[in-house]
Image (cartoon, rainbow over all chains, first blue to last red; front, top):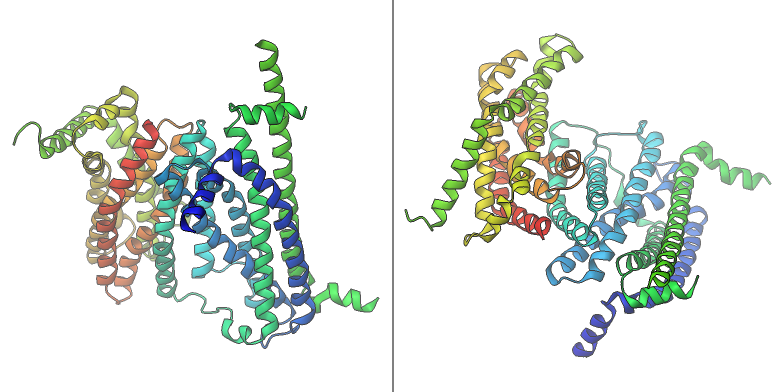
Length: 252
Length: 57
Length: 227
């Protein structure tokens, strides 16, 4: 069993074999994303209660906000795991996955900040507070931007992937330190003590399931779009090989 | 008709709610467009390169 | 001390780096003057009220120190990269991380230490009292080595890259944030009567943590860049 599994992993860690597999998987994940999005948004807007204690109708932003915030952090961790595997075991496919994940992660980080601002305005009366979580999220966005800038500044794709991979690993070690520092800093300044009353909201199962399903939709979407992006990356980096030559030469 | 208007109004918070969901939808649409376009341009460029190589050799 | 020993190589590298910098004093002085000028700009921008300046002083001095430390990062490895010394370093029988540590120590002596020494001047300019100035010096003395250590990773990653100077700031500044928070926070916390022991301990912990982790990462970064 273990042996058979490792054979399968080795087989698909070759870009040549992964390319068609990714092509086959994309429609499935895209379809699942669409289904989860429809179900999740239906629950958020029609099943979940319209008003939550002190939070009025605007709290419906929570569904996309929480999903985006989760994604922004998960993607960074997944990205650095791929980068680590790529660096240590020298697996090209893993490097390319890390590269392909970054833009989507940055997008979700921005969306978490954006939806947070639009939620903060009606509930706290301001678009931005220097709250520990908001500040950490902003720094996470900077880390994503650094990763992508380093990647695009280096011409040699191999070196670009390895250098930015190392940066992602250094970043992921730092994220807990940054979060803890920002929390400390925030309490020292006795900033806004408003935090979304999570426990109360999670009591309602419709809200809980709405959040989970919207987050699942985001996951499926991420997988689909990252697989699509990694296919382009494979073509670029393997353009010298005969199989890519045959592939692009065939479809003029 | 009124129900639909109410739905988009969201108790006067339409700007915030649709601002959030609208921008999310817009970003996702842009990302999909960019990924599809990148695939297209790369395939075309590589096809051109391989034609060139064939001619040369 | 035999000529092949690690300690000998380590010391030679340090002496060489310091000597090279001393022959071109402009580099060292530029960093220091940058630090002094940036801090002097703040009163002009914020206004001359000492009360306001005293409040923002720790933050301003720390941010300026961050920028000054970063400004000099570009030269940490680039000269050795251009003339091939770095490739020779890879061939040494000693661990690359130890050699990196020697270079980082030289970098701190030339760019971090002057900031620590001249910070009282800026503290007085911004109206800090004696205790606060001493505390500020201690935080800078603990924090700037960590800045050099962390910055070295960024400098290693951006070796020979287009626009490396600006890029390194993008990579390194987010990682500097914890040091900024606790460095500037110590002085504020002492001013509000809470004491600065906790801040200083954490700054020390950052320094030791960076001392353990970053030479290895920098060595890995250099290997990638020279591949």
